[in-house]
Length: 422
Image (cartoon, rainbow, N blue to C red; front, side, top):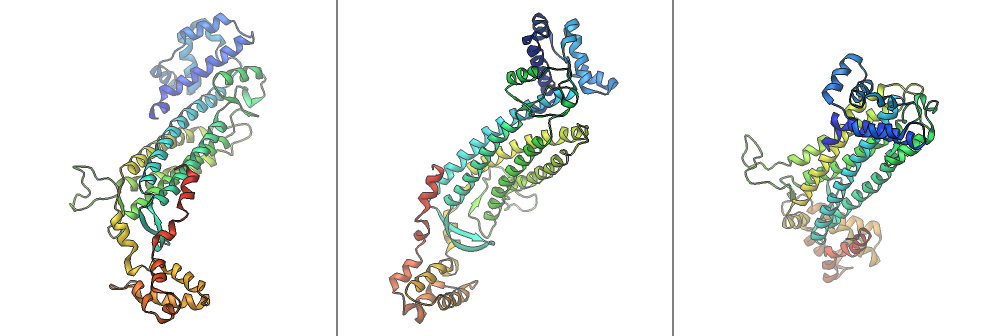
């Protein structure tokens, strides 16, 4: 990914666009075909020389074209014919963005595979579900991961659509009116570059497209952070249901030898903040003066390489983290059963209602038993329920026992898995 955002690669895409335009011009009979063949044979650049020229002319495109002409000689007069700088800059940028998205989409597939595998492995690994950070009702770890997989698949679909929206070039000249360039040149050049001509450009491609690009990657970063935060919470010492893999020789603290910290998940949370901040900058770039100014240019030189490289790195990190995640089913079981199974309170409530008890009365009885057990060293909700005369007057011992069977909560789990093709 980093290679796509080097100055050398950028200039290669500029040259690719210039040659595509020359080929289109020749196809339409506007410049000699033999001149294009000579340009293709000779055209090249030297990054240091381009930078040297730019120091004098203070214009990156002019510096580039000057250097290219040093290679091609007289036929260089056919290069950049009728174009403005942004024709090349924005069209070449589209090539960089598409190439970056292709790499990101490949890595998303790897992440989806890693999550899918873990979801299969832990389809029936019972754990407690939590809402507000408080124990709620039983789920399985595989079910939690199924939700992750669904979210990743949505990102994949969004990014496929984004690739189409960003695969746009413009070869329309100053202010976009085609005054000195035939629209057919744009159509042919874009087709040869696997791009679509912009519907109605100004001197630039409107930055709503680029704003969408950055926002979509920031959204993907937010999802990665959601996974990372979940891992961090489940790795807390008093929870310890999952844990980042801790490699041989790894150390967690300079002071405390016992520490095994979720450093990779924390790193991902930090990087997601950077992506979100870049989304704001990308939105600021949409409102330019009239047909264009270049206030967006300096911003994009920072944020576009950043978001692509960061997103790819985050995907690689979270994929490896999920693939090698340590899972502790016994701790999950222990945590679920604290206080004698208070998490089965709703099932007891519903059983009493089904037996004819008023819902408010049933709620009050079950809540009273649950709160007596809650946060008590020897709290035992099951024991309190089985000894409550109002409960036992309605439910048999076997019916009470069945209320505490976690399998009831998983009777429709297969349907979710079928939707995801797991």
